[in-house]
Image (cartoon, rainbow, N blue to C red; front, side):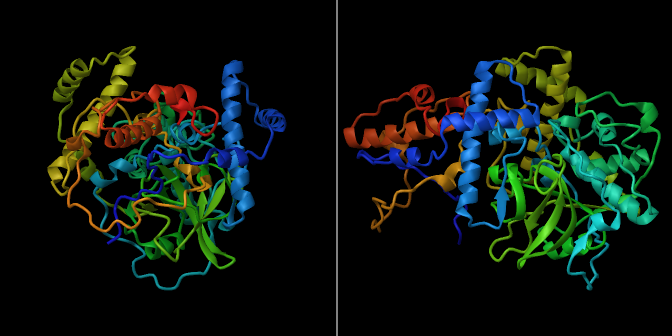
Length: 516
């Protein structure tokens, strides 16, 4: 079988010297002077202003690292796509993802999917489809720093099917979903699901226009007057069969489709042109819309409409590889298709709410006392309660299913969204792995006899558990733990070493303390 844990980059601490630093130095192809000029030009182009010199210097370092990565990638010329220095070039990958990619993919397992598929028996499919050319796609929009990709995805699919059935293309309001669709999973800029957006549209009997209910890019109060005005609606929707690209092709051949993807990598952040064949994981975090498909130089692709403005990608679009020769690169684990027929789906979502608000408030109070949680005001407390409630429901639904060999628990992170939890902690720079010159030798290559179990804690080679807090220096804790272990085995003495020394002093290269 294929190993389930893929250790793409594993460092082994060994007590001998390696001349590795030279590689890091040699990859610096641009001098700081010219890079500063490029940063100045970039700031002018995108209207960037920083609050002080410290922030500007910090952003310059990130900009420089990103530019070097982009140019090294493009100079390698071994992929059918190119990266570009876009409006996100002064952001780390974590900073880029946190406010934008808030499709709640971790909630997908709790969704009861529809069982029918309208295009199941479709056999004749065109070789290429582009719904832009058929007047079913509105111009590219920009969600800004609001994590409502789910709303843009659902709205684009609704705009498309309305154009095809009514003959008129109307730009509909994402802000209405952000402000008014807040009684369930969907929580405006904090994230949501396209399924729930479709439920809201059906229950609300439609959406207003973009003109009448314009996009603000922040959570607002629902405008009841404008919510009551409907320019377009749907009467139902379906789920495209999971992990079935042929089914998705059938759907996209007939209408624009709302899809979820993993858009977390640096290559996605800086995608500029070509057919994207980069690494795509299964941690779905971003809602987009498939508006066509085609072939370029023998590579089949999906044509995908994004919501990051026209400066990103191919004027706001990305072509993503379809039907790869190896493992499927685009994992459409949860794809919603808007259709004009009725489905009794709303009731299923309601029945999954197993806890009442009253008892949940008590549990939240007990949890706050246990972990010494204090919020700045009532609004913040209510916001955290909603997140806590959602997480508890997810945890208990998962555990009650009893179909996995592990259990989830209500721990100190229970009032955080998944994005908030990840952003300050998980800052291993995996997107930089391709630029690392790896060692050619492996000390244990010829070892054949292996014990059935190993636990280095029992052999005095592991120090007690530590806590990195909200500093993204997991890389330091990992390296230190490996060093502590090999020192204990070779010197016969277990010593707890300093992660803070790495955080403070190892800052001349890729390592940047709490930034990753």
